[in-house]
Amino acid sequence: MFLGWARVSYESDLERFAQRVLCDKHLTLETYKSFPNLTFVAYEGDEIRAYISAYIHEKRLLINNFHYEEGVDDSIKERLITLLLQNVDATQHSLIVLAHICEERIFEKFGFKSYGKFSQALYSGDAVAFNFSTAMAKRISGENFLSTMKMMDKKAHREDRAEYLSTLMKQSSLVLSTPNGYQHSSVLNKGLVKLSPWVMEDAAYTDAEQLLRGVIYHRGLKKILAFVPSDVKEITDLYRAYNFTLTNNMLLMYKHHKPDINLEMIYAY
Image (cartoon, rainbow, N blue to C red; front, side, top):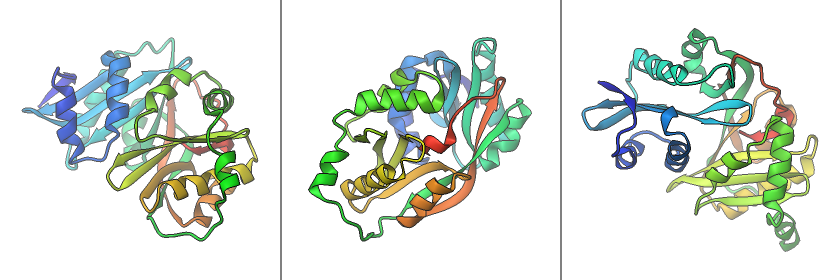
């Protein structure tokens, strides 16, 4: 098996990989375009078996993709992380990753620590009875989305991530906002929508509920996936009220400097 930087055929290789493993192809390719030196891939012949990538923000380096086929050995995962860390200037940036609970031990080997527990929230497309008026649709239409996104995201994450957030936008993106927050969702595959990112002013529960109604209404009966802070009761209660199933299986982890992220504002990571 070969491990190293992505090959020139990366885009077509990724297309085949995505047919076997759930991943965000758009985010992966946009990250690669921005930081090709921070994308590392495990190839077996002409096929991708695993890959990792990262995006450099103002203060932190976000490991935003870490995907692998079932059966890939932990040693391969560790070698990919090693390659990434060897190409990062640790004096300039701390690192952060939203990891599955089964990856906790691997990242701990490299000095990562837990910052907060997260849950996978999944809406299975079951109809939920709620009102969604024309007035509500107009209020959350996203007219001031970009300015709200930049302001609220910086307040929650304590750094400017506007350039990164712009890379998330694609043809299938649905953007909604109110004066108290913004929400972005996009299609991962034919039947699944990923809700990410979603940031609200602290305690703006009414606005948050309107945005959740909006994404369910506009996305029809598709499945909706989100990752939410497990210990923020107001947020988890909102998801459960709209028939999302929550599974406590994720961890937000960091290496070097502990981040200062307001998890009470993070409705979807």
